[in-house]
Structure formats: C-alpha cells, structure tokens
Length: 261
Image (cartoon, rainbow, N blue to C red; front, side):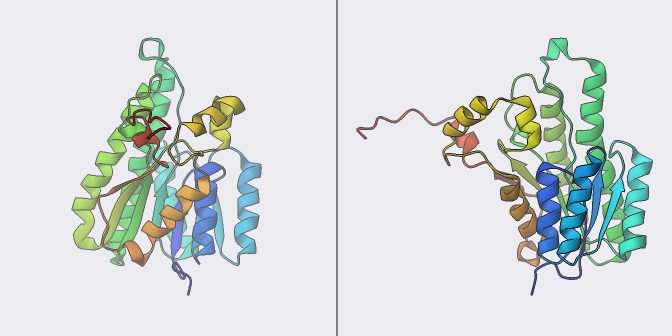
C-alpha cells in the first residue's frame, strides 16, 4: 500500500524545483495535491499533467503566499474541493543577493513577506483546519542551511530562514497534543533552475567538489525526505530540523587531509 493513500497535501511554490518534485513524490505515494504557484504557469501545467497521469486528483491554485487572505482562501479551497487537508508543505521562498549596506528595502520586504510571513500564513491556516477537524496532520517547512550559516549577501533570507525554524519548534510544542507534527527540512546546495540562474555551470561544478558527498543535492533528495516526514513512519518526530545537505555544512569545517593519511 502506498504510504499516503487517501491523504490530501498542499504544496506551495510547486511549479519548479523542490516544490515540483515534492508534489510529484507525494502523489506517487498516493496523495491528492493542491499545487500552489505564483509564476511559471506553463511549468505548473506540466506538473498537473504528471500528477494526473499518476491517477491522483490535483487542484492547481495560483496565489501569492505573502498575501494572507489568498492563503486563507487557498486552504479553504483545498478542503472544499479535495475534501480534507492532511499534509502541508510550506516551500515557497524568495531571495535577492545583496550586501546589507546596499540592500534595497523593497527587496528585503519581499524576501521577508514570502519566506517568513508566507510560511506563517500557510502554516497557521493549515493548522487551524487540522485542529478543527481533529484528524491530526503533518506540517513540513522547507527551510535552509541559511538558518544556521550566515552566508554573505543574503541577510534578509538568512533572517527569514532562521525565523521559520523557530516558528516550527513553537508550533510543534503547541500542536503536539492535537497529533499535528511540525518539522523543518534544511536543504543545502540544491541543483535547481533558480540556482542555475544565480550561478554559472562552472561555479556549480566547482562547488559540488567541496561537498563531502561529492555532488549537489537534487530536488528529489529533498522530496523523498518530505514524503518520509509526511508518512506514518515519522509519527513520533516533531519539532525537528532535518539537515539534508550531503555534508555541505560539515565540509565547511573539515581540515584538508593529506593523501598520505
């Protein structure tokens, strides 16, 4: 039996990258999907076709996670159209690379509005539904190792990702008695279209060599961890931050080792 048969999952930012693979992986395990996206409608349509091909129901929903009322309507729509909401994956994020002293306030506000407040909106409305219907549930936030590592030129994003980690721990404590699990996955350097727009092929290849696992992560690497946390296999896990980075963070502190050793 598929692990998520009969479940309904909402995934934000699901037209590309980690969100896309997460929606597909959840559907492969039997879940019906509300697929949220803001931009890239053609790519969202491709995901819809893939999930329909898996025999699952899918509801595409174009909305901006930073807009609170849109998120309230989206969660309500998931329940009205798909009948329930068991799994919520807060994946959508936004970032502009700028040093602090040169940061444009519009970019900072947009980063925080999407990456921090957008996560709050989605998680709050999803949790409210789960509490009301008393079936438990799974809330999974896609964070980042930026929550722990102060990467340069990413101040607003770093701040937002650190905040959502603490949000998850707070919600986990508040919702444990309702059997609602709240966890975070903190990916490392993942090979996505967004990363390829920000870095050259050479930079990515050279970066991969510095990761102990010897390659960049893939969206599928993250998606399979989401499936695990969304399943009954992870029922006793809540308030956790799962780092999925191929040893990237570890590799930042390892000394060079002589080949003679």
